[in-house]
Image 1 (cartoon, rainbow, N blue to C red):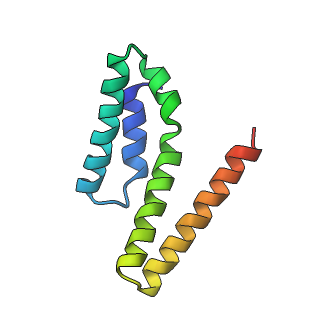
Image 2 (image 1 turned 180 degrees about the horizontal axis):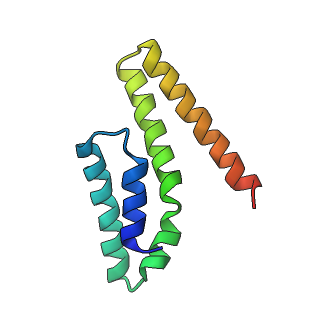
Image 3 (image 1 turned 135 degrees about the vertical axis):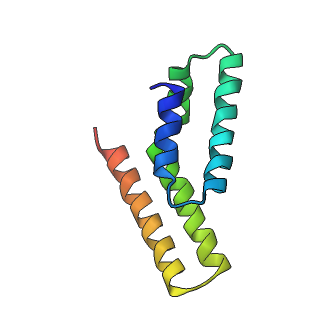
Length: 99
């Protein structure tokens, strides 16, 4: 997978976040690519070392929902955090036990 496709998938998966938060996260991953390329790695090697953009997004969204539930302990925020963590756990089980 190329850098462009990786960043596009990550951006799409992070749609629930604000555009500023997505831009900050994408900038961080741009830096990962810059550093990796300076070290002589290919884009494909960098993508492999980073992992799936969907998995990264799930982890970031779960963290975001937990932070929201902590900051504003409303029933809706707590339920979102709970479902995000359950979804992440299910996704991890599928990845570990899957193919």
